[in-house]
Length: 102
Image (cartoon, one colour):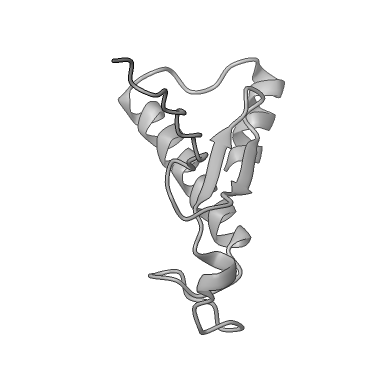
């Protein structure tokens, strides 16, 4: 669908008339692309994501989040976080205490 819509844009210079149906279709296509990209990235069974070739969870390698971002050119950037926290946290140094003045 994405390729057909892109090709139609190049051929005609326009797409469907703006409206609720067009926006809903665009949003559904975007969500479908994100789900497929995330599913392709995950290499284990977790939750409702089931893989026949890897039926067991692997918490050591995959207890992480998959982050998908839409780039300005409408491509998807997919990466896995380094930690299970979301958003990923960076440890902050504790302030050094000064001796109290008397």
